[in-house]
Amino acid sequence: MYTNKGIQVNEHLQTSAPNIFAIGDVIGDYLFTHVAAYQAGIAVRNALVPISKKKVDYRVVPWSIFTDPEVAHVGLTPDEAEKQHQHTRIVKFPFAAIDRAQAESETTGFIKLVLAGKKEEIVGAHMIGVHAGELLGEMSLVMQHHLTINDILDTIHAYPTINTGIQQTAFEAYLHGAGVSSNRKIVHALLRLRK
Image 1 (tube, helix red, strand yellow):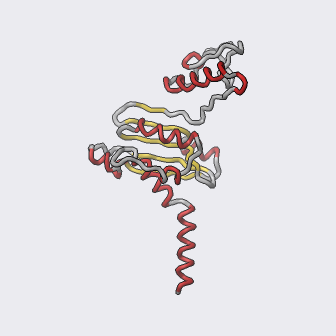
Image 2 (cartoon, rainbow, N blue to C red):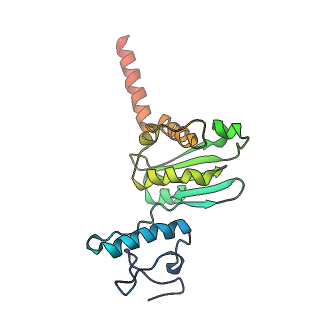
Image 3 (cartoon, rainbow, N blue to C red):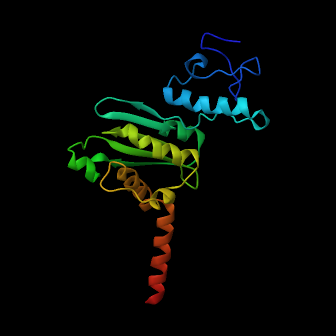
């Protein structure tokens, strides 16, 4: 079966004929080479190992526009996050504060993380700046596997790279998060007890 949008497939990328799979532009939706490559992996796996079929997961699809500066995002926008989650927080970090961006005189732009829920899961990342599209790999991995701000902070990033901007943004999120606020209260209470 098909529509004006393309060939219809199920969550396993099967067409109405169960032994026929379709991927890429012919099924519509995400018209990106990287999405087609992802779909190919799912379709091949499902064709060869039909016992435990894998479903497609479009929760984390990176987008990049190769302008100057580049524009890139993955996941939810702040507005989408607010509609889906009770608690959201935005952390924005300027490219001007990234040492490599300064060294290359490419300080235009920012990295913005969208955090949601009590655990402040990263549900969106938006960037404008030099090589912004290159930063999407790490952010997509973080989001796909529900990694945390602390997981980013625990990862050694090569210095000086534009990628250290992700670590710096995560550090800003940590500094202004509920965990640090609670720790400050505990330290202040302990200091008052010493007196």
